[in-house]
Image (cartoon, rainbow, N blue to C red; front, side, top):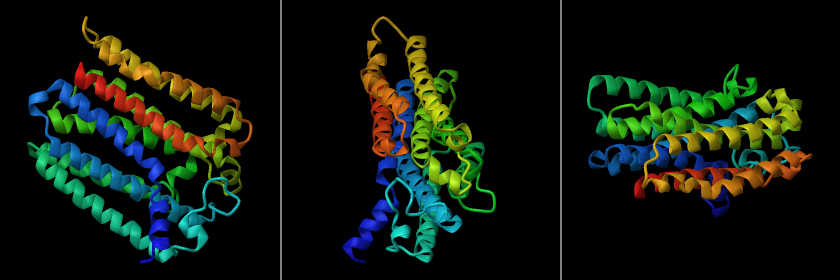
Length: 305
């Protein structure tokens, strides 16, 4: 395989989206350590990170394959051209790459469950959730009625990068569920949904032509930008509410994530004022990194508090 071919596969994996996979696991792991430092398992955290990254790459491969099959990714799109669009990767090769990621995700997830489960209920529940995650990653754009074409992608991202990503990681570390973790779980999911929304706002014109009815297409450009600001505002409030709810006289570190709020506000203002989809092209990577930064600062605050 040539260097150019490897570069195309790397671009198809979309490394700029991988911070999303890392953010929810960091937050769930930090919450687990915060709740039960003696029971924390580093190997479980590593396997959670690996499995989530593989699922993200699987989703990206499936997204490109599905969009190619439906003709929604053309040379008119504002975002970077994919390997399959350039002809550097054939549809057959991408399909085999997709299958490889399914197998890798399944094996990594199975190993994780085998190490972390404590009873049969854990085993069956997480096996079911793992299979559901694989199916959701594929059917976002692949199939007769992909849910990404019906404007349901935001809900899926909220669930898998928020509630399940954070909550599931927390459970694998503590084997319990606490009601207060719902706040950072929702916050993480909303930030991930904001990354998807930026992508959809950027591609809104091309998606509309291809009948890819993302939530941004359904809302329209202006309301989509307002929706983006709402996502960021509610996410920030979720982290803040958790910090206040768990505050003690010495827990100022719970507010460490506030250091990233100026970046979040600057991003929100830029998106709100952007009139042309092309202006949003660099915002996808920026939003992804801001999401990761907020979750890292939040996690660090828990660990040193």
